[in-house]
Length: 386
Image (cartoon, rainbow, N blue to C red; front, side, top):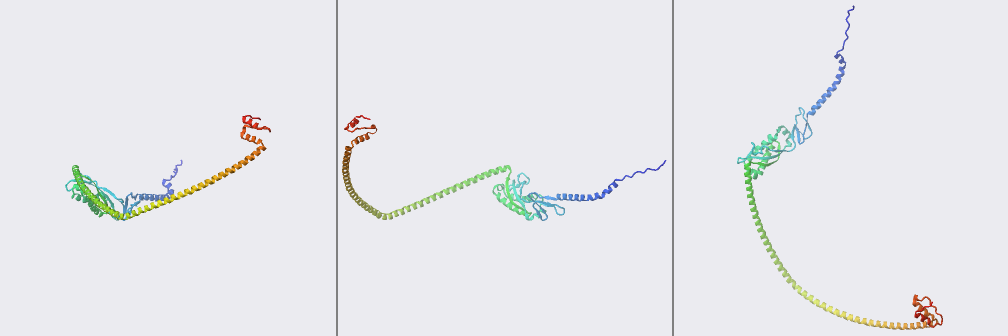
């Protein structure tokens, strides 16, 4: 029996299997690593960008960035955001009379005062303010400055002065002092105004009553002054009216005197003129009378001439009528002679003429010769022969 050992086959390891693939993988991983580094850098850079909100500005060193974005890279410095608009502040701790920060008047009363401020940053000192200005400069800088100036001023006045009489003067003085104080810190005070004054309840009632009485007294005083002025005004108006009436009366009297003198002077010229007018009218009447006489005489002569002419015309007309009648008679006689001769020659013409005059009553008349007028007698009697 052969005791030779059978050879076991060799299996390759994982390292041996990946060995051919390592060079290509190394070459492929290098760009991937570069891309990953670039992406990580871009993400980190995007996180280092600071967005500037509306109404704000960013200051880094001496550079002022007003809008957009600012880089916050290590080594370049962190940009500081500052307000670009005016800030409206209202001092809350000074508004209540029962708070620890209440103002004390000269009487020792605690009062609250509402104060409104409008503050802006000095544009010329923005880099300095970015380095030195506190983060909450409203409470850390503005309020302490206001309190340090306001407390001594209020302590010098009474509540009534603070409430009414010296309010505007106190506000003006405080605004001037606070503007100077804040200007040293790079802040510009644009306006300061007082609001409501918060007084203790009991004192407020008493003060309101006192003010009401004072207002009533002032009103009464003003009313009396007004009435006195009205009386003086009425007196002056009456005096002025009387003076104007006297002047008007004097002027009217002078006008009447002047008018009378003018009328007297005018009458000196009017009387002769009236006399001349009367004489002129007499002459005109005499001339008119003579003209009427001449016209009447002319009319009488014209009528005589017209009557003579009319008589002569009538005589001529009568002569003409007589001549016409004579001539007509002669013509009629001659005509009758002619007609007589014609009838004697033609006796039937008489019958024809009669028939023509009878019209449509006689249609045909036959008259034989030698009737001696019997036919006419029959026709006259109403008999008609056909």
